[in-house]
Image (tube, rainbow, N blue to C red; front, side):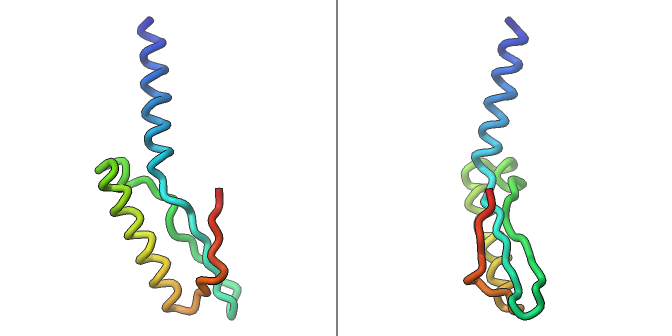
Length: 81
């Protein structure tokens, strides 16, 4: 019975962490062909739960804006699974 509870706990924690991950965003510089990735992280989410997810989304947004300011085209932003 202890094994069942351990497995259930691992599955539950894994599900919570996966649900808190932000989407990975790939941006492309159309002039140079260089790509940059933002997002896909769970660091802040794991540390601070729902509030951490909001913090992580802000970090991702800053990353996208910084790359856009350096020539990466927002129109080519794609979300990856």
